[in-house]
Image 1 (cartoon, rainbow, N blue to C red):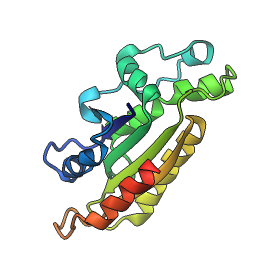
Image 2 (image 1 turned 60 degrees about the vertical axis):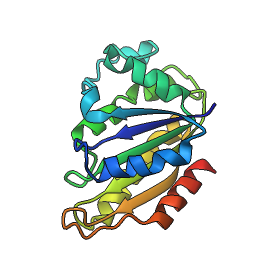
Image 3 (image 1 turned 45 degrees about the vertical axis):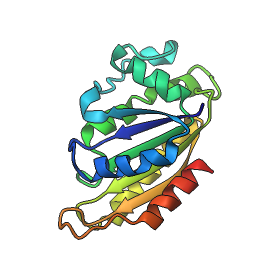
Image 4 (image 1 turned 180 degrees about the horizontal axis):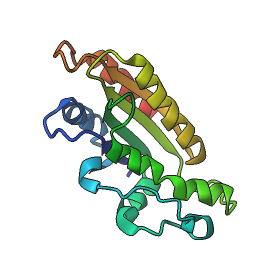
Length: 182
C-alpha cells in the first residue's frame, strides 16, 4: 500500500490548512495516511553539530519516528500558511533538519540519501495575495527535494485568507491531487 505523509505547518486546528487537509484526504483513501503537525512535533532546530556528517541520522532523536515515516512515504504533502513571506518557524525547523540527508549525500557519499522516491505537493494559504512568497516557498522545497530523492509535483495557492475573500476551488484541488499522484 502506498503511503502519504501530510505535514501541517499551521497552528490553527480549524483554519484553512486544516480544512484543505480534510478535503485532500479522501483522494488518498487507497493509501496509508500519516499526519504530522509541525507545532505538535516541536522540532528542535538544527544546531550544526556535524554529527550527521559522520553518522546516519541526527544527534537529536526528537524526529526519529517522523523521519522513519518520511523515508518510507511515497507522497509528501505540505500544508502551510505564509508567515513573514516564508514557512512558519516550526515547519522551517523540520525542513532545516533535512540536513541529515544533505550530509549523507555530500559528506558521506550516500546517493541517494533516501532510497524511496517521493512525489511532493505544497498547499499554501496566504493572508494576503503574496504569490511571490509562495513561489519562494515552493522554490525552497523544490531545491530540498532534488537531494532528498523527491520532486515537487503539485502546488495549490490560496490567497487572501485574512479578508475571508478566499474560496476553496475544487478544480484547483483536483488539479493539485492529479499532479501529485501522476
